Length: 447
Image (cartoon, rainbow, N blue to C red; front, side, top):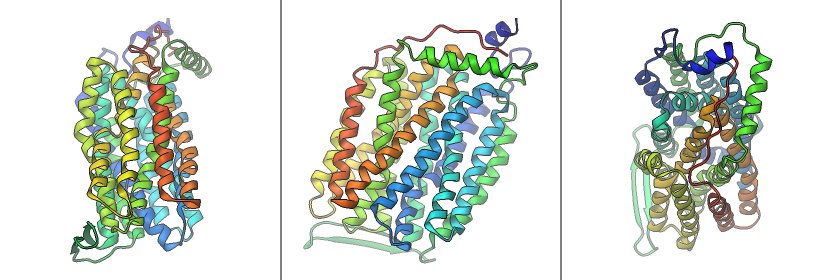
């Protein structure tokens, strides 16, 4: 009887079946707060430029940064998604703890005296970032089942706003100027506008930004304190764990979930390293920190507009054709960047990076929506989305050494060739995704 009641009730409903938190409040808070979460996370690739200069580190040390973020973020995301589906009434606590960990991690990073301690603090901040996505995406997927692609893409797009502002601001503050250079030796163009306050140490940038995340922690808890399901009575936790685990195993059988997860993981492998590789390569070509930061911004900015459009299209034409197209184009763009660079920076690099930015994150949005389509019948949205994020980031740790090892030992072009090879492998696997993945039958979930 308890199982039937649980299966038939809305996960975010009160006793009368009315949502305890308005859909508009939930969507606005989750989608808006995501921008703050990414504001700091995406400034790390630029701050790392200052850190490797201060501690005289090489490219492989940057690979260690990517790996640390991936490993700790992956484990946290996987476990967090599973726990959120078990204790959905505590979802506001999970989201608030996430933003608190981000602020605390970057505060500790700003005062860490050594590279090893910086990595430890970065691990804490990465765990906080990873903890955000399973409950946030799970809430959106449950509340808006007919528009999953759109709302998941909107969530990604506001995160991209933070991704744009974060590196651009960090690059300008660290360099102390807005500088752009390019062209051949005879016709080289140099533009520089010095900022009135001069350069600012990366430690102050991280330290002074921490209060924003602490304020966000309080605001998120207040707005979403009733967002989860009502607190269950007489919960059999062991039964719920067994049921959820069984449901997850069943959902991988004949639904296309394996192909979806594989494409998402392969895509994440290259994405997580490329966002560090591009600015470091540009610095190698002789551009300024600010100019490198602009390119990190361009890897994100166009997707703010195109991401929701692609998500909206996927709700109508399906996920598979768009995933296949994007994986193929991304493979060619990655090779194009290294092919046109020659011995220095050319405007074509900016063009190709901007086109990449139009499609960046869209594959992950689409694979998340496809996984949620399959998981919805079992009320395991957060578990699957958490597992997907964890899967992606753990594979990203492997790719970090695959890409930055050859860069350290040979040359920069090898990093781009390997990234393109990873994207091409994802393109081949994307051909195996069913046109319309079969959703498993709904099962009763213990209260």
